[in-house]
Amino acid sequence: MVREIKCDINDKEVTLLADLRLSLAEMLRQNGYFGVKIGCGVGECGACTVLVDGLPVDSCLYLAIWAQGKNIRTVEGEAREGRLSPVQQAYVEEGAVQCGFCTPGFIMTSTAFVEKHQGRACTREEIRQGHSGNLCRCTGYENIIRAVERCQKEDLDKETGPDQE
Amino acid sequence: MFDLDSYQKPETLDQALDMLAQDPQARLIAGGTDVLVRLREHKGEFRCLVDIHDLQELKDIRLEDDGTLFIGSGATFTDLMESAVIREKVPILAQAATTVAGPQIRNMATLGGNICNGAPSADGAAPLLVLEARAELRKAGSSRTVPLTEFYVGPMQVDLAQGEIMTGFSIKARDYQGWTGHYYKYAMRQAMDIATIGCAAACRVQGQTLAGLRLAYIVAGPTPRRCFRAEQACLGAALEPGLLDRISGLVLQDLAPRDSWRAAKDFREHIIQTLAQRVVARALERNGASL
Image (cartoon, rainbow over all chains, first blue to last red):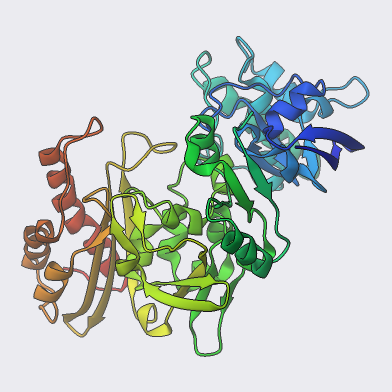
């Protein structure tokens, strides 16, 4: 039942041997990607969210073998050369992390959300809807939404220059 | 780890049909958002899988020359939300897709799986029912087409034979041109929830009369259902304020909501009647009509 899987994980080409009965979340954790958290295991909580070809998916409900030929992104690949990604930095600035268990999944959802809506500041309602597949028991979501707003604003400022007041 | 005995990955639809024909135990997996949950619960029924996840042949969404809209069973809810042709021709389907679970699930879950699963709470079912969608089914060596109203045969039971694959849905031009629709999902939460009641309506207006009405509900009976009696009774009715009351007074005749831990029967009946009014009113508004 073991198959060879070739895919890109965080921009690195990898070849893994995986039991085809594994979920992608299990396979990633077995290979050291512990940022992928398994919370509910049934696609309710979003803690295991990774990006597959840019789309957020619950890796607990995704067979490992489906990763064949895909581009997978986990939280481990977001910081580059010791610098946090803009989404991660915004989470820090806004204090959007408490216990941290849901954070890797949230970071990946926010990353896909910010990349998808590049060049446009979304409404709070859009941000809430875009993050409705991730549960957080600590923060009450408010700081997470602020972090996404901040990240989008900084992104726009970079393009157009900050508001002149 | 999922409890699998066998796993086959076809590269084409024909291969998938052959694999299903050769192994009577085999079941299909597409998006996996229902099947993998049941496998995780060690349900024996899905131990032998034929994997049609990402099978390109099933992902097509296209408008045919005669105006028929074809939606491949492998289209995900995200595909439906983002498809230009769906948003233009049958916006009610894109609208219903946004109410399904959350973004991660919508990126995986397929319309075909939502229907073949047989759940009375399938958000995809209500809009497809008011669009008179037909299910296209293939078997090694044969194919057939079944109106969605007849595809649902009982609680968690659909008219899908062993060895058959639902390839998609077709919607005729006459069933969406001139019609406007609306879908509303009543649930405890705005996302990641199963409908307490879901209601879809489609209307056609001629002058000051209702030239066509289609009304469908989910979680209001053992299967998603149309309200044919209310629809027929109101055909040709004048667009006047009493019309909505008349419709909501008739809808329960075709429905059979029940008590469950999610909601009591009488509460469901109240929601069904309230939604009949609101959803039909919105569908009419989209047609430029008001009461």
